[in-house]
Image 1 (cartoon, helix red, strand yellow):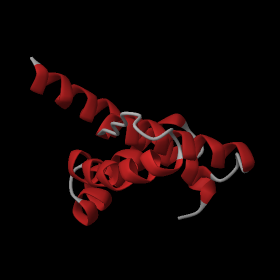
Image 2 (cartoon, rainbow, N blue to C red):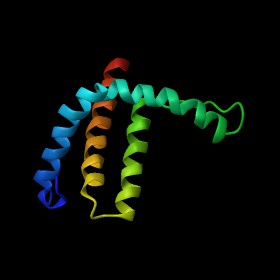
Image 3 (cartoon, rainbow, N blue to C red):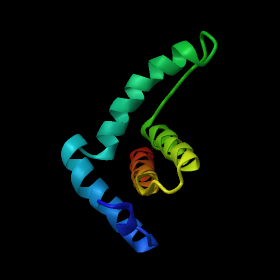
Image 4 (cartoon, rainbow, N blue to C red):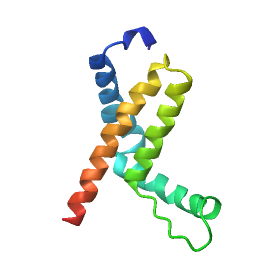
Length: 108
């Protein structure tokens, strides 16, 4: 895919939709599953390296989506013409919104 193909909001949204509903879902499963796995892997690292001993650390699926979106923002800041970062940012926003609503439904 060439970057010039993705120059409108609509084309960026369509590519993000294709990626998160087809490619990534097929490869990694739904975001609630892969983000949960990532959260479980990140939590002990954050606990041991980023906070004082004894500090309670909880990394959930929404936190994973937020941090992945920030990664894409950082990459887009360095190279704003690299369209994949913008497409992935949209994807993490969509997936983050979905896992947030799923989490809310579990509480209610």
